[in-house]
Length: 115
Figure 1 (cartoon, rainbow, N blue to C red):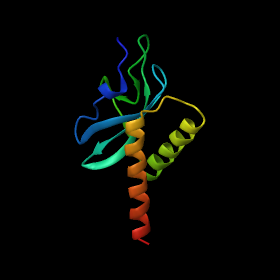
Figure 2 (cartoon, rainbow, N blue to C red):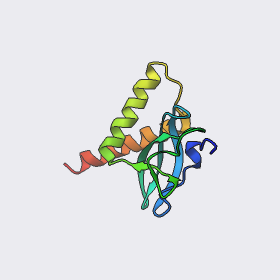
Figure 3 (cartoon, helix red, strand yellow):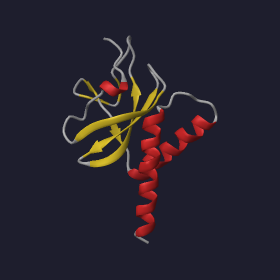
């Protein structure tokens, strides 16, 4: 089996569409993306597969899939990626990270408005 790039992972098939990969450490490591789950913008995460081993994790019915995070956990992951960038880790996608930061800021403003 060939290594499947994170942007090629399109499952879950129903209700999901990927918009951009935010962070990708490569084969056998972690990837984070932004997408739409039932029309709501969300953060998703997965372990990338590898040429020799698996489709990565999670997977379902023989398909690599994304794990959609609850919003608060997605915010925490985006904050961690910002810290990784500040520490010199270059595994982030600048455009994707900018979109994720805007999403995170919009979420914070929304929460403020509800209190």
